[in-house]
Length: 313
Image (cartoon, rainbow, N blue to C red; front, side, top):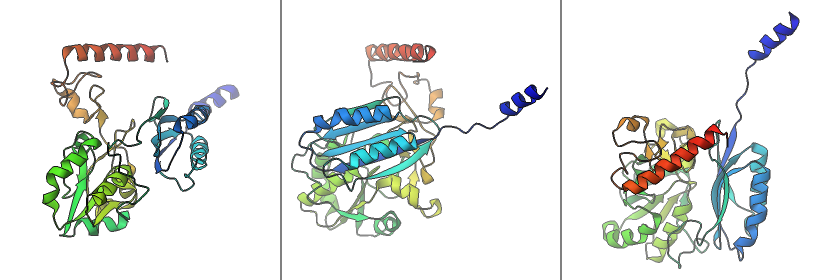
C-alpha cells in the first residue's frame, strides 16, 4: 500500500520542462585564418550539446545557437577569447522546445553577405540609437526609416512608416539604394534589421555614398521588442527569426508563424488550409515557383524525415 502511494505521488509530481537558452550574436573583427578556428569551436559546441549555426569569415563571426545555460556560457566565453572578440555582445531568449536540429560551424566569405568589398564596419558605422530613443527618432518629419531585411521578413512585421526595399537578399540593397537615393534627398536615414548586423554594413555603405546623417537601431528589432513596452511600441506585427520559433513578438514571446519547408518563408497556421499547401513541399507563396521535379524531390525529403522520426534518429 505504501509502495503504491509513493508511485501515485510520483505520477502527480510536476516535471519541469527543459529550457533552452538561445543566444544571437555577431562581431566584426579580423580573423587572419578563420578555418583554423573552426575545429575547436565545433568540438566545444558538440561537447556542450549546443545546436544552431555559427559563421566564420575573415571579417568576424555571426550566428544563433541554443542549448543548456552552462553550455551557452562556455561557448560565449570561448568566442570572447578569440582575437579581437573580448567585447563581443549577444542577445538571449529562451524556449521550451529545441530551436535547432543540429550544430553547424561554416566558413564563409562574409558573415552577412552584401557583396561590397569596400564596406568595413570596423572603420565606421551610423549613429547607434537605443531602443528607448528609437520612437522619437523615426517619428521625426525629416527622418526616412528603411527596413534592411528581406521581403519575406518585412511581410510579417515592421516599424510604422518604414520603407520596404522589397529586396530578396541583402546583396540587393546597394542596387536598390542607387535606384532610389533621390527619394531621400535632405533626409536623415534611420535603418534597422533583426539583430543589428545588416545595419553595421548598410550604414557604413551609406556613409561611403556621401550620406551624412545615418542612424541605426542598437541591438536591432529583437532588443527593441525586449525592452520597449508593447503599449509604447511603434512595431507592427511579428519579427521573423532564424530558428524553429519562426517569429517573435513583444517581450520576445513566440509568434504564431510556422515555416514552409519548401521555400523557407513564414506562414500562418490557417495558411495550411489553402489548396497550395503541402507539408514540406509548398505553400501559397511558392507553389507556382517550383517545378514538379522540385516538388517530387521535396516529397522524398519529407518521406525520409518521417522515416527518421519513426526510427528516433
